[in-house]
Image 1 (cartoon, one colour):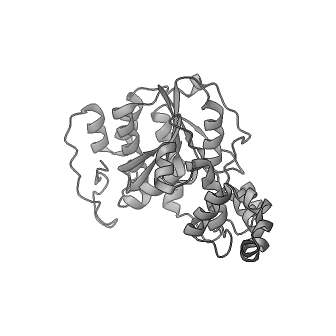
Image 2: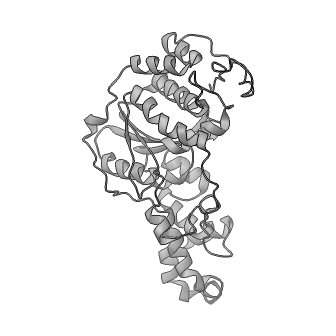
Image 3: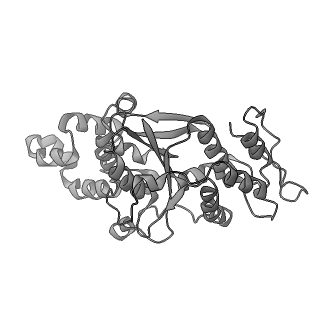
Length: 313
C-alpha cells in the first residue's frame, strides 16, 4: 500500500522543544526544536519514505472551540518566544523536504488532519498515517487503513495504533474515544467532562450504553444513574463538542498527487548546512554513519555552541 503521512507539526515541534537543549543556529536564533523535527523527518525518509505527505499547523487566532467555551485551554501559559520563532521557521524545513503545509484561522492542526484523513481514507491501496505528539486523533483510527503513530517517551520511541491496538490499549473502539473524553474531560485542554466520572466509570458507561448520547436518552431507565449524572447532560454535550475533531474544515484540499514530496534529499541537505546541523547532514549524505549522541549544548553564555547537537535516534 502507498502511504499518506499527515504530520501534526505543532505537537511534534513542542515535543522536540522540551526534549532537546536550547540549541542555536549559526545566526544565533534558537534551533533545538527544528533540529529535533529535522531528525524525525530524516529518520522517516530513510526508513519508509511516504508517497504523500502534508504538515498541519495551528494558528494563533481563537478557534471555534474558544467561541463556544471561553475557558478552552485557558490554563496554558503563553508560548515562549523562542518556540514561536521555531514554529515559524519549521515551514522552511518542511519546504526543504518538499512537504506542503496547511493552516487555517479558527481551526486547530488536528481539525485539518481530520479533514485530510477523511478526504483520502477511501483512496484504494492507500494507508493514511497520522504522526502526532498526542493522542487526540485516535478517534480517527479505522482498521489498518487509517492509523496513528504517536510518541511514547521523548521523540524516538513511537507506537502505531490501528483499530485493534486502540481497543487492546483502551478497551473501547476508536470512535468511542470522543465519548470517553466527553465523560472524563481533558485536563490538558481544560475540558471538565461530567463531574464525578473517572476513567473506570466512563468505561463502564460506554460499554453499557455505547455512546454518551444513548446514555442520556436512556437515563430514565436507571434512577440512580439519573440522580448522579442526569443534571450534567449539557456538560457532557459541551465536552463532546470540544473533543470532536472537525472533519470538514474549510480548506482547499488538492488531489492526492499534489501531496507527493517535490524534492529529494538535496533540499534537506542545503537546509541542514545552513542551520549548522552537521550531524543531520552527515546522516543524510552517509546513511551508514555512526549516530552516537553528541555532547549536550553548553549554556548560552558559552562560546561556539552552534554545532552542539544531540542525536534523537
